[in-house]
Length: 111
Image (cartoon, rainbow, N blue to C red; front, side):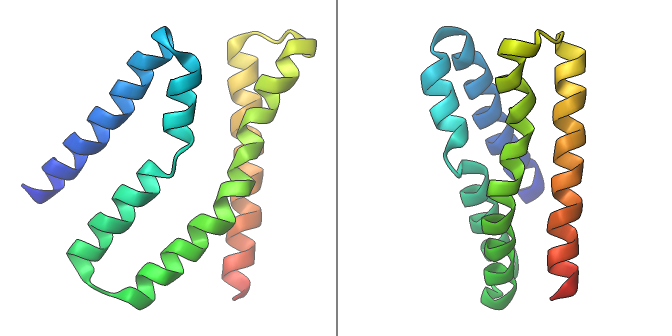
């Protein structure tokens, strides 16, 4: 029941932002850029486990991952000049995101 409630809250937030993107893309982008998923995840995690040490580690991981995850948007920005189609753009974005994940993983594995 609790898991289903978490999924429902998250799905509503994402669906609302996707719907809003068609009407007000600037506002939708701002909403998605907010750390809403991090906020929800931290609250859900604390409510479930009540372990501040793990929660702090989790928050540090998020903080390190945010700048790395921004590489996902580079192909979309470059697409203005490169004129790639959507599949090529999204695949490039996912490849860059994969590289960023391995950088993140290697940093936290070394700790």
